[in-house]
Length: 376
Ligand SMILES: Cc1cc2nc3c(=O)[nH]c(=O)nc-3n(C[C@H](O)[C@H](O)[C@H](O)COP(=O)(O)OP(=O)(O)OC[C@H]3O[C@@H](n4cnc5c(N)ncnc54)[C@H](O)[C@@H]3O)c2cc1C
Image (cartoon, rainbow, N blue to C red; front, side, top):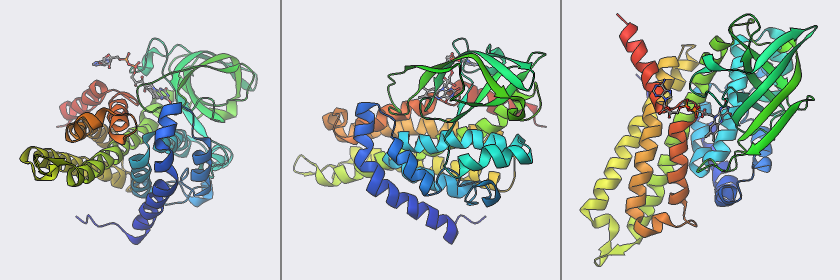
């Protein structure tokens, strides 16, 4: 076992840390307050190659691998989970095309996403289901050279900003189709923007598909086998959320340490109180455990391994850890933790989002238990 990072990994981590410090952290509060999508930062991440980090250069990516992606994402998420989520959500359709697309699709659809010329999203949640893709009602039927899609999707992150959306819809026969839809297509309508607790500014909206045409050549994988595509690509989404939890918990710990050194209680710094030390020690140990479960999942993906199990483990543990660690940060800050112009209050709200989106904790537990029960 070697836990040290390579020079290349350290380089991507360092670049992201600088970007987060100079560009993201100063804007984090305003993104949260305004609930406006951070278009400018999304563009800057494209120019830095952050929207195609794991994928090979021949498909427009940087070829940095999944661990470098995780290290960079962690830094951005420490500054703003919303800005990090832009990077993470875009990676899910990229992963689907990379794993299941043919060579022509990788050139035509993955390259512009990985190069940052286009932004991608994913759309599976509907009014009747989020946790069970088997219940998806949006229909897709083949008509000449195109699929025609009709239905309503909910909670589509970055909906007004994305150029391409990987939409999951029922196949005419049976199963699901995974189709890349151009959001500029007639009939694709972005509706209500949700006023969410956390992850504010991610422009999460409902979307109506009213006879939207997508060329049949945009079908990713085989007709009716979209469920397989979703299960595989979503593992990268889960890895992304695990990283988000680690990033924001690190920020919660850092601001708590700083506060504990500066703030006085009973004539001495907070950090000298046993209760505060207990909180800080607990936060650090939980965070470190989540970090390594998460890095290991990314490392295994770099080895070409299926990480359905590991990404669920990491997502479950890290998201719960971030809820606990931000709650502890709130205790360290006392009343100041609840104030909106200090970061702890935002971190606390964002952490709860990590537990919910890209598969709730209950689903992660079922996935993990199913694997354990089926193994010899
Ligand atoms: C900010 C944000 C961004 C999002 N972005 C996207 C996106 O880009 N694309 C997209 O498609 N979706 C997106 N989502 C949707 C999100 O992934 C789903 O909402 C999430 O997976 C949970 O699904 P649900 O809300 O339908 O919960 P439901 O499936 O309705 O579940 C509700 C509750 O029921 C319980 N439950 C449900 N199923 C089970 C089960 N099998 N076992 C035990 N308990 C269960 C759980 O307690 C769960 O919390 C986003 C959501 C948010 C908040």
